[in-house]
Length: 119
Image (cartoon, rainbow, N blue to C red):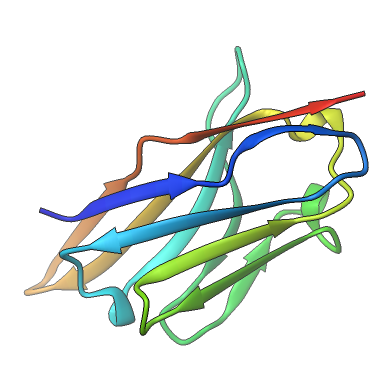
């Protein structure tokens, strides 16, 4: 069973930075696509950034130029560097790992890490 463990969340003032980490175990990490999602209170979970198995990156408009997603296939880890944080970035951040094997899609979520940005 794939396990994803997020860390690095916390409380930070607006304009500050945080680096989230997601450690994956028991997964074919190098062939997996990884995404960071967030869910604010009363809102739906939304994609923040993703990185594919070939290193292609996608960012949603609100975080472009402020957030950077990266991966380390040797460490089976993915990171989200968040700079110039804003109060509207406050949410629980989740790591998602997905891959295709034997004609099926496999999809896993971490437990989430809270990010709170104070104004």
